[in-house]
Amino acid sequence: MLHYHLWTIGCQMNQAESRRIAGVFASAGYAHEPQLDSADLVVLNTCVVRQSAEDRILGTLGLLAGMKKERPRMKIAVTGCFTARDGNELRSRFPHVDLFFGSGEYGVLEDWLLQQRTPPIGTHLPDTSTCAGAAESTAGVSAYVPIIHGCNNFCTYCIVPYTRGREISRTPAEVEGEIRCLVAKGTREVVLLGQNVDSYGHDLPDRPDLADLLERLEPIEGLQRIRFLTNHPKDMTDKLISTMARLGKVCEHLDLALQSGDNDILRAMARGYAVDDFVRLVARIRDAMPRISIATDIIVGFPGETDEQFESTFSLLDQIRFDVVHVAAYSPRPETIAARKYSDSVPQQAKKDRLHRIEELQARIASEINATYVQGQYEVLVEGKKKGRWFGRTRTHKLVFFESNSDCLGHLVTVEITKTGPWALQGQVVYNSISEKGGFPYHG
Image (cartoon, rainbow, N blue to C red):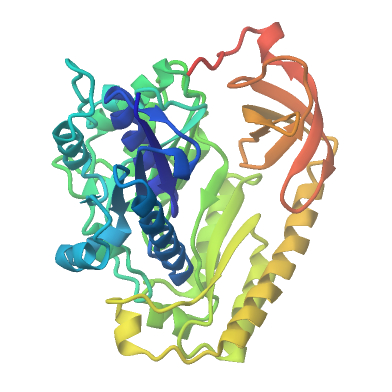
């Protein structure tokens, strides 16, 4: 039996695509190999949103070039955002790579595997547009499900519209079909994905929106939780907020990217909203769901960002008090408007200092928010085990660790929180769905 290794870097969309790629390999008769240097075929699923990610890709490609000299029969394939560049240039620069295929081009991979004559005789590779191909041997307790690909926004710093193209929504029937198949395989939570999930459906004949899709998925038997990301502040509607608050399976958690707390920087980023718009949006969300947790993204060191503009962002973060802040230093990406229009004028040390200040602020805020969970009892969906302790997440996406002698994987467990920190909670089981109400055992 031949073995494959799947190396993934980047966003949740990449992770969802890797799940589908794993399904293709499983149906083609490959076994998964956890070690890159022991695999017969290595696939790199790539991201180039930040320079640090691209540097890791280049380093791994260099490592693989050396491996292939020692093992010439080893095959290498590359997919993801890195492959959006000129194909001839990629093949010339990386001659040791056997296949480049674009994000979501599972048919190209299937055809190539057939050409390698690696599948056992009689094997039929799956149609990855159906639930059979999507979930084959790759279901988990929680699964990412893309609902819209690409992005139409063209924020000036972002490379996504150039690497993933314009927005294309999947039909509600296709999304529902995949989720029903995943649930049949043991999935209990789905995370609906899009570069901007709030744009979902605008390109479909009946123009269903995300709220309509949530309504459609709510009745699926065996599905316990629904999440979605990432949201764009300019496109999040009151209809979506009220639907989210009303539906029992939709979790009280949002990813809502702010990026900057200064209006001039937001305009330069082409974000399409002002600070006051964002503040009012957060207020409406919290009015509808008082216990909701909100995560955000921040970019420090955008071209021209002054100390005063950074302080505006810092103060706004202290005012809004997000549960999680993903902060990154600006790095110019080829082809983006910002890279063409602005010079990368903020010194690297200033970027690092600003990033560290936000990290320190957020560690304090997250510690204070999480401390309010102590002595509370919360429903936790158990995702796995690490260092002898089970872990899972609350409906508000808080990571919780606890001990139990039962096989808790895939079950809902009520945990009383006894200790908290900025990044995780710890507790003890007070109600176990396994013994007391049967629950939904994970069998994927």
